[in-house]
Image (cartoon, rainbow, N blue to C red; front, side, top):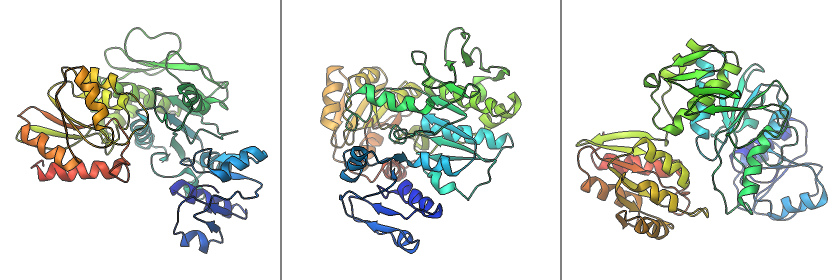
Length: 427
């Protein structure tokens, strides 16, 4: 087992439960009494290759890490954690990937299935490793797996019964040699599907497996491959009109596409129009994704900490197109900010920039004549934005960047924003 973050630990335990002798390796020091008590040998820190019959890779581990690179060079089979889990379980799987919208769509789909009377659990990149569910859920439970590009590497047999690629824009360019390699990793999700499975892809992309490509259509007439579309409301193939858009609480054009994809996949699992409509109306949303954390003096504070790339931040501005005080910046993922700056024109009253990428975003905004201020940290940015805001303004955290320069993750960043908003009077 290479990599001992959450999914790596779950995979190591599953390997042990399946009867393997397990050596777990990580480049950093790791406290793992649970693994040691399970009879798993832990080598951390270590970058020494291990002689093995199989290597299971945690998604956070780059291919260049010496034990992993040696396995590839030696022809040792390398599996993703979701590959291991899918081989150990007979459950039906639904896979969700894309640069943006994965978590919302995954959580929404699991919610729709549960509201429709099916057992379902959200797992994968959303937080619960799929491997941790082996032996813990019944064989009838639908596994709704959020799949990152990293998880979709090294999956020689992984097959979701329904799968969606929501969108692909440049991201993780610090991990991939080029955009084509990142895009191909996303397309791996469909490679092992069978003709009766559901494959939903963007208009300009084709399935890599046996399931024909189907589309969600956000505007315009639905074509012959449309599986869900917006035409005076939400329509799903075979079900007709499912709900009026006014009855669906999720905001933004990007969320319409998320809703269409999740609804089509729920229908593929056997749900009817009324069941889907009921689930859509009761969906509470996702933490750190366009999460309204409170208001103060007519100013709304919105936490979109999960907007970790420019395209996600642009989607947030689509949901809040007027009088935004934007807080952005963080650690770099090698993505440009010119498109974000163009989207900020007209919508953003002022931008409050933090972190490693603050100066880079400032240059992009300067070119579009969007006002900005560089600040040392997130609490200061929230405080200044709140002090300068007027009734009707939105203080929006949509960083467009990863969080690891100042935070342990996007969740930590979102929690700091919530607390800072409360200190500014939001409630």
